[in-house]
Image (cartoon, rainbow, N blue to C red; front, side, top):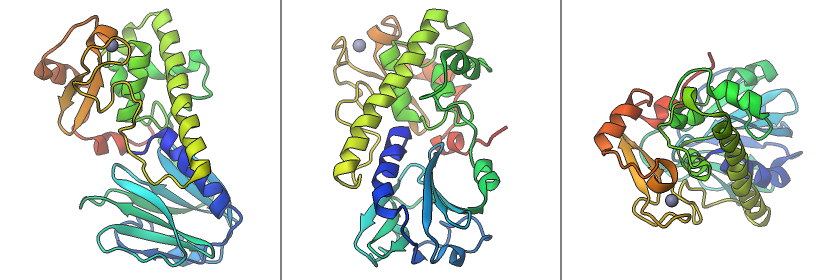
Length: 299
Ligand SMILES: [Zn+2]
């Protein structure tokens, strides 16, 4: 699932291509992609793009008359920038947003139609789509700690809950916890002052590292290879491979359709818990699917 660094890279690539440009039309490849009926799709035709925003893991395209197109790519949705009038590929292209100088197309791999487009009018309606998570890039430590520890959760769950933290999912939470040398199943109610400090620093530094890298890449070319598994990641998607810090093999906790990766010497004092017992621990605090987590609404 595209997370904060990926979404910011998309926004960086979209800016020079569509800001101040007019939408000629929107073509839908899948009728299920558009989840709202009012304002109608025709309302965006001829409108100039005036603003781009990230709302959690969503991309919001603001138009001159106050209408917003809000894209949620979920797990398998991706953006592409193609020649004007790009063809819609059957069962793959969800929609094309046409501009004079190119088409922004949205595709989704697989057969599950989870990615969505909402059309809303006004900032209040836009904010209602925001699950309300904290912007960890700007939040001071005291606020970060207060939000993450408001409920006693596992660190993994607290970091990936869109109501608690904005824009972090399975991939970057693994990387952040490795950088902080903290266990994914440590409870937020039990962290020391020093651990909070370390987690806060690791969160900002990890996101900043990837954000800068992707935004620099997006300046050169539209991000066409957005994936949760990146060269240079320490543990995410690297089960069995050596930890870059200590060389021990990266471990995993499998739970339903999720996998959490961690390094035992670096994060759990070397403890290797069986998949089943870890799953049970995390299971009480972890929804069955990433979709379930992602659809949590603002309280
Ligand atoms: Zn290690």
